Image 1 (cartoon, rainbow, N blue to C red):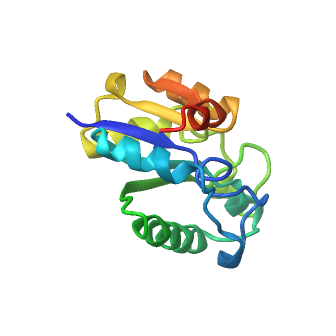
Image 2: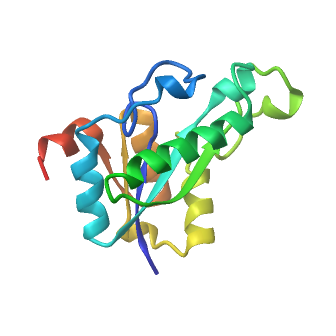
Length: 160
């Protein structure tokens, strides 16, 4: 079984611009690069898990989220960082432009659905894994999945 470092996307790996809807606005948080390099060298696979309610709200579609993830993967690859997989939740429990996107799903953090799905699909040992994010819902999702959970500010202070 593998160990994973699950990472929130907006506010943890890239700057949070409040509903990223243009690739030009996607930029890495510089302090995350050595953290990701360290985790990768320590044997963790890197997995992005991100709530993307902008899909449900109609700000952008699933194809744009996938395009953004490809763009992000390319940016990180320039630093020798490989993202094993991206998972995102397009739902919102109360607001949606399409009925199928308005749901109280198991994948929207703070629920652990994305982490559980990744563990099953990628062969991840959740007890040996960790979750890093910039909000309490990120940490709660990690803890609910059985991972150790860390706020990004605490990880950055380690200066790996």
